[in-house]
Image (tube, rainbow, N blue to C red; front, side, top):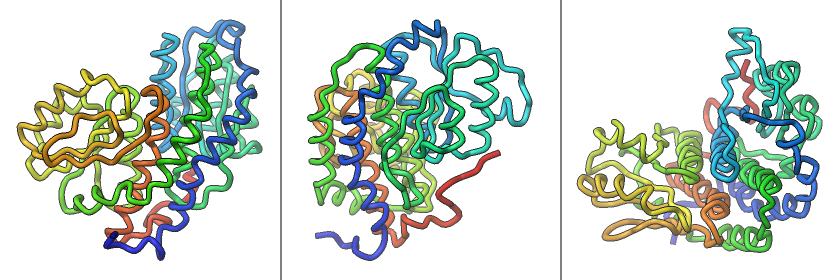
Length: 349
């Protein structure tokens, strides 16, 4: 039985997370839309790809980056909008694909960068939750997130939609067959698990350091989990690559550190062995997000999806980290629907 009341605060965020399976179904029912760019890489002689995003969308950008690099092998970078908005750089983007990801499609710096990139001969694809947004209008091709109006300040279902759109885009380029039924059914199963994160919430404290680690496809969700907890719980959280963690930050690890590892089903175990071995020398407990970890002893598991591969397990497991942030905020006495100092649309210049 929960010691915190989910009936009074956080209802918007809770509702929007719960809508993820329906959002997934809408996107998958519309996946033929991606046929329009099936031959884009060859037709436009694309040599490199850049992804334009901020905040939560930037975490989705990392997922898309891993997808393209591992499934296609093209070089992928993340843009620096200030190179244009502040430094007025002249772009030379012939044979370059720019993929803009944004919930609102309104942030001035993203709109400005996309405009200049298109003028510099880039092919621009956008993914937004508003077909009429400036970013959608600038792009050669726009793919709607189909997430519906998002009212909670901390983005949830739109992030999940960005992951799935990214997966469908790259799958069209590679010819991969999508197991739509499994993605939807696993998302529904995870979303329906009322006690999904209860034990983890009960054993996590805002008074102690929280670190969230991931590697490869789990790295974007580690970053997003850290961001969601910071947004909703008013506490500083690190979201890092397990590899980067070993290159310095691990020196700050203590027995009191609350260490979360994002571990989707089918993730390569060798990607986290070195980190977990060193962590266990100092900390007696690890929190695992997903079904791909190696829990033992006092470890706590926030169970995730059982999709056929790491890539699809990752996009479904986003629900788990969002539920944790939601319920941890409520248990800590914060309203995750209205985080102090934040607004729904951030207009960065």
